Amino acid sequence: MNIEPFRIKAVEPIRFTTRAERERALEAAGYNVFGLRAEDVIIDLLTDSGTGAMSAAQWGALMQGDESYAGSRSFERFREVVHDLTGYKHIIPTHQGRAAERILFHSTLQPGDLVLNNIHFDTTRANIEAEGAEARDLVIPEGRLPSLVHPFKGNMHLDGLESVLRSEGDRVRMVMVTVTNNSGGGQPVSLENLRAVRDICRRHGKPFFLDACRFAENAWFIRQREEGQQQRTPKEIAQEMFSLADGCIMSAKKDGLANIGGFLALNDDSVAQKCRNLLILTEGFPTYGGLAGYDLEAIARGLEEVVDESYLRYRIGQIQYLADKLMNDGIPIVQPPGGHAVYLDAAQLLPHIPSLEYPGVALVNALYLEGGVRSTEIGSVMFGVSPDGVERPAGMELVRLAIPRRLYTQTHLDYVAYVVAAVAGQRHGFHGYRIVSAPPILRHFTARFEPLMPVAVM
Ligand SMILES: Cc1ncc(COP(=O)(O)O)c(C=O)c1O
Image 1 (cartoon, helix red, strand yellow):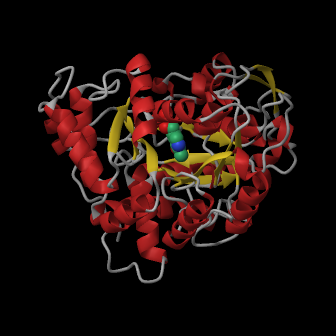
Image 2: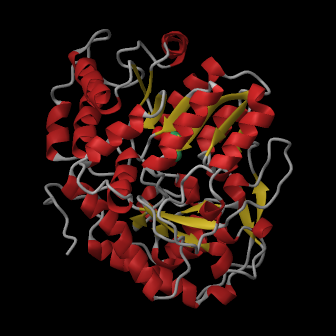
């Protein structure tokens, strides 16, 4: 049985809303759940980023925070923990993952450059494109087929990588692999694949970076699914993952088990120097990087807790529990379930809504109206606009139910499954949406929508 490996010491009340209240709230938010007040949400599965519960030890560590501007004790502790895990020479704290992305890309990319990744996360892609460079995805074909079961759907397509490096090698500034592959369903990448990417990068003389936000969940899947890894600890596996790359960007809001923070870590001295200079300009001195000393303490402790076996067994088991319940109800989901979220296949659930009428948004909004469950569209709203400004359907129309770490109990997940099943039962009555206004980049955060037909009151 997958019981929570913790007791609950502090609780936060949930406010229950009525359907009529949710209809008003959603309309006021321009039918974009990012615009809702969190208080109007019953179960918040918008993201697993920064939304988890910290442990008593982390809260205790906050009081150890050394807030010295330069050379703080908290930075030393943070650096030791990150170095022990990753082995990288330069450890640069940032206020969150996208700050690490911006600093790395601004320090290394020129307009016209190309960055390859299994699937770029939205902020990663946007930060590359902001430098006038191209972000190209090279996940294995199996990684784009939601219903196909494969143990490592996040793997990089090695022949594709080799062929781009041969034909456009001059433009390729770096190769990245996102572990786990968030935009492709939270799917893991095998050690074998990471080793092969490392070999290819070495042969072509290209730096290799991990987008490591969910490194511990990835390590757990390797231990469960990859031959010969069952006797190793998640930490040992994670250490090998990091050792294969030249550096990483990290959002500590995921597997750092913290509410804020991130880092950039790398071996190259001259790139590190450029990054530190930019860090000072926009984030802060290199020993705090936009974080408080107490944040560095919480992250250091979080990185130790996240590789604990009983935590990871419970964590991945919780996602599997929700996925199993949904599959029993015949709900189409990305198979197998990922490490931090269950992804509903909105294209399959709502085949009558064309991609550019945003089936994902229709499903997200229906889940909110039905039961106050907040989720995210990962489809044509998030990925439908190309750098040329033309809108094209994304490869998949997914809705992500991201599970915050250590926050919700099994009963909360039972409720989520109940709401999804109720929505699926009404799906023929749903209609699409059109965009009323949207910014040119990262439009999913602030776009406003209008229903193409009045939202049906069930
Ligand atoms: C794979 C991946 N990379 C980068 C980021 C960006 O991190 P942050 O939200 O801390 O800026 C995220 C956040 O969700 C992510 O999932």
